[in-house]
Image (cartoon, rainbow, N blue to C red; front, side, top):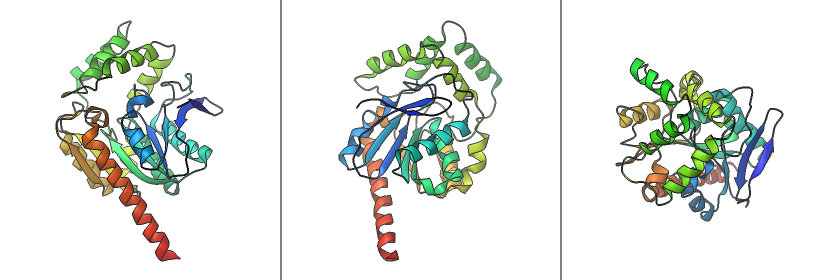
Length: 278
């Protein structure tokens, strides 16, 4: 699909749009990733009749660089502004890694704009500080080796299998991160506190599905983290056996049906509620 741009006063968000008149689904990738992260999930949603919009985070992919801030609330506001710009809400919002925190912020800010949330490998609160890990991370993401460091780390997020096109995707990601301003955006989002989403998560009203790989290396015990999240927002859990941080790409055959089923149930419930209200 052709890249389009949502121009704002402080920058431009790149996205592609399947068009159509189905319910809007907005898909946001993880920090330091590209919107093509959803290359396996998006076609299935389009085939199911949804209008699918995949957007790059600010400073990432084809979105502009040089934004005045790279924070969780700013990324959350980008979601709401994009929904308004597309004029097709409320939207189902699917986010991975960093993006779920922004989605939580956005839902609480304006619940009427968001129909449901799908949070994949979600970072919605800050991890306990670990001095050694913090120092290693700072070193890895600094200096002339930083893109190599990130892509090397990125490989560890797929502990069981990598898709056939993984090397090609990683080459595109590395090339993108070498562009001026891209790595600063990655670090900006990466080091922004998750306080705003942690404080808001208990106020989420939208139906929510949490998708977590049980071998996600970002947490000592991914299932414990996932259960904490669903307890906060009374959500559902899809735990993906042997998957890492990107289960929708590592094991799409296990994740896509679960997400489709969730969205279909939300849509059916909304139709029934609308019928009863008439």
